[in-house]
Image 1 (cartoon, helix red, strand yellow):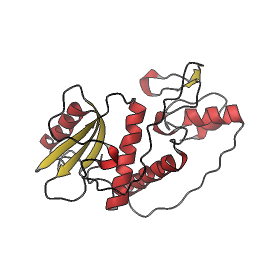
Image 2: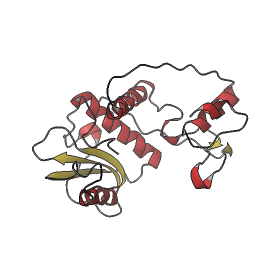
Image 3: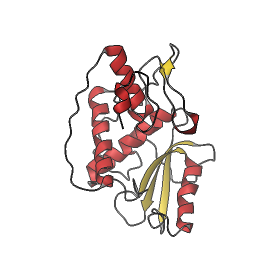
Length: 218
């Protein structure tokens, strides 16, 4: 999926979203890449949960996200696009790197706390225009059902609609006595919302030993 990194022209955003950024780093810094791997027992949910944890640990240690995670590009470059809008990235001196969302000071906090990771979590219905992060809790349960980001009211309605599609892979997870809580982050860029969402999932993995029950379930 990353073979385009070693091509003569910048690759598209697919099949791997990191390829354009890695290509730019290799061209501009004459870099060679070193890849380290570790075999992990468990399914894709386990692996993605650990990926979130490792990324947030990097954010805490280095006070920034990895250079090309969350769709980022090195400074001064517009990213390639894939799919039906195929476009090859190009230099642009005005293309500035979005400031990284502040990394949490610590991850080992109760995931149902009203101040989890420093955010104010509200239970009442969010305004239709609210943008931020949200969490789904099951009454009487432990941990969380799901963590998400975006336009909060629309995203919650989308999850609830899955319960009306019995064959949907997440239908059972979003059924029953659930509570939805959210934190307003209207000034955050979409890239920053993705970073914060990752931090929340990482905290859940560290504290509960797994991602929320519906996370990464399709």
